Length: 267
Image (cartoon, rainbow, N blue to C red):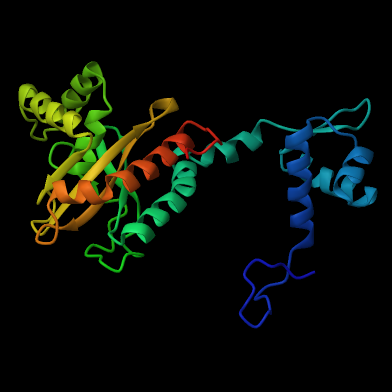
């Protein structure tokens, strides 16, 4: 059997499919879905012959991913499988699901966009469409940090914080030795942005560039923001908001639904 994964243009796969691995993964998927299952039940559910089921289960027992009951031979996944699942960080899942919405945004407006997450007092770009935009200027932005106070991404995140959360965050940044503005100045800035309905910044990271941004938050303290980046000489933040705030709002609303684990995407 030849897998479709990694197939070359001419239809030829570069590697042969590892059939036993594929079958083992199918077994794991069924045990994850149904819980304890006897070999005969697994055979019916997967279409794998029973002798192969026994060999696969024995291998999975030996490596610690499956447990067997002596009384009926039924199998179930062990807690070790959680180690694999826990290795897939929640923010990585969010980014995977958020990416299509960011691509749609950039396709609609042409300007590039970044998604940043707040983690440990740092605002770090985790996803970007700079490589997809025909009007890009910073292709390698992923994993770059942005200022909480000087960037549109950071300011949009601050708009999502409760006062006590902002106090704690500013204390963390100050303890790190980074400059922190006066709290009243931050409050005045956030008050202006809340009236506008979005955050903006001009020349904070690059003197030639401005951005507008909106924040989102969800379960498990996931807090982030999405921006639209544009040249200062081409657009002002106000003009950019007039043209693009609604598409940005739809994108962020869709990402917000992803963060909350809501399958019903907004209209």
